[in-house]
Length: 174
Ligand SMILES: CC(C)(COP(=O)(O)OP(=O)(O)OC[C@H]1O[C@@H](n2cnc3c(N)ncnc32)[C@H](O)[C@@H]1OP(=O)(O)O)[C@@H](O)C(=O)NCCC(=O)NCCS
Image 1 (cartoon, rainbow, N blue to C red):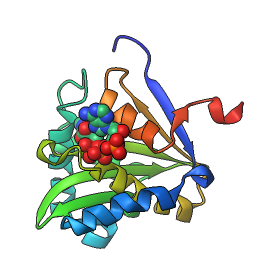
Image 2 (image 1 turned 90 degrees about the horizontal axis):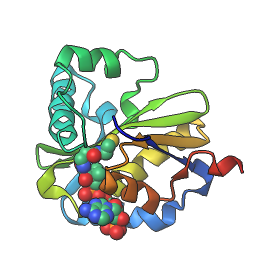
Image 3 (image 1 turned 135 degrees about the horizontal axis):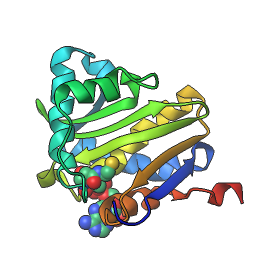
Image 4 (image 1 turned 45 degrees about the vertical axis):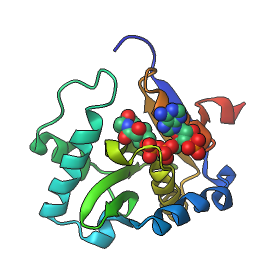
């Protein structure tokens, strides 16, 4: 990749949940159900659905290149030490999987593995709603921070995280 990754983080205690729960309520009012892979069932069928959704959304990440095979994806995501299906938030429109916000759990922090919303559903606050639900999980884990990094050209993703209060890595320690 050309240029530096944009590395962002959010202090869990600084996250203003009351401000963003409104996005969760808006999804519910629009008939978009927010759930987790744990609640839906961490089954082979659901893992495959998550893979397909991730693959579709990742096609819009700048310079992402060819996506993993299902086997590679399973190895990286489901077999990883930090994997927890309670930290994989899914947005459903009826039976259709339309959004995901997947995290992994690490020592003291939660890492945002992938946030994606299918193109026709973008711009409605669904990613913020999913990540707000994900923040509840980060709290339950006792994580103090949520971390993420993005390609510098991924303006939507960077704007979405900054909107939630994410700041450049290192700023919280200053
Ligand atoms: C990034 C992505 C997940 C955003 O999903 P979304 O549901 O459309 O985002 P939201 O509607 O929740 O927008 C959240 C905030 O992000 C910002 N934002 C999102 N899209 C934007 C755009 N096109 N232009 C400017 N700001 C934008 C806004 O601040 C917005 O908040 P507001 O509507 O209250 O002003 C979506 O564009 C996507 O799936 N992209 C492809 C996959 C990807 O790049 N994922 C990130 C890498 S892990």
